[in-house]
Image (cartoon, rainbow, N blue to C red; front, top):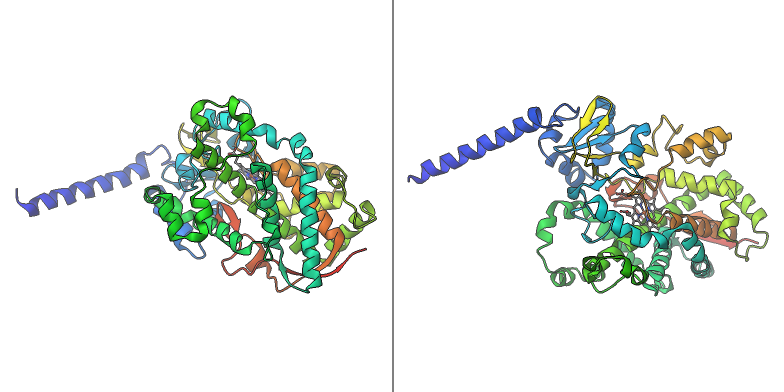
Length: 483
Ligand code: HEM
């Protein structure tokens, strides 16, 4: 057959296929009636443009905010995905109880740990994996861990005293990541990585881990190619990332206790390593950023710092004593400050996409089983209809009359809700209280060349929220020990 004729037929077939696909997605697809930009309905490159190419990357979560303003509470954000922004609908999306929720497979394709509970697509598999870990993250389990957290706070305070003696500047965001990693690795593996012991608080190592988040958007797109590369080659190409590429022979200390509750295929080595990787990455940078945010806003606003110190001085008359988590939890201003940090810092801007086996009805829209849906937890926490001046760090908003505080708590979802909500919430709270209270009680500090927009606020979605690429960290000077 004439090669020109063959190529023309192929080209024509491709064009007909493409045009039919576009027409189908625009006019016949089950989501064709949902408002939103036509380009997003036709191709996922619309999302890719904002997440990968629009500086500084990870920008679709911000673009979606603009789209809600133009199109309303429900928008089609991709060919098969919708985002709803409606505070009263959040708990139907992130439902618990007898409602089943599957993870949308495309959304976890790049996270590098397919065997983890967080990546489990089916609702039932997720429940199985989660049930084996739940007992180790209950409030009672975390209270049993309190002494170990206190001992890490002790090490942190010793390190801060060293920086004071040497009159050195310290990046508190690095110190907090070392601390949270030391805690979660000790708990998970029975042996801490002891990152706080190193002179630079393991800054180089932490940069590597943060680099892993920075590449998330690329990994999401090219995951199928990256999966073909053996871990040894990846480790060779990027020696700093070696520890993560070769994360295969580790298992969680406490998984040993849970093994008899899991079927054989669930205790395969690589799956256990995937679970461990998610726990240490999810359980470190998030809490660390919340802690650095507390320190930043307390030092930036002398009024907030004074109120915190007055409350802490009364609760801890001798600065060198250690106070229990339960005592600290009862302090209203500290509690309000912690809540405000969790609210304002957009720690997890990730679109947490789920699907349902049953149709999901939102107003006049009926979403078919298998349709991916989400609501942005971070944008919910910055919703101006709930929080007056949402970008202002204002602990007082939590200290109004009980009814208004109750209303705010109804909408307070930093750890998400339902089956897929954060398993580490109790651990995170214990760390937030014990660390922030003890260092604010013990040290007078001041900021060193910190710019909120550059160094503190989340500007990029890299699953967790990241500050700008130009960030110099949250650097502080320790002025003196407090009496
Ligand atoms: C301030 C600190 C933290 C915040 C704001 C936070 C927030 C969240 C959010 C919003 C989710 C849901 C993500 C999604 O639906 O895609 C999540 C899930 C998760 N978090 Fe956290 N988290 C924090 C600390 C921790 C800690 C300390 C751990 C350590 C164990 C942890 C482990 C996890 C895991 C394993 C998941 C997946 C849960 C599942 O799939 O069932 N997080 N977290």
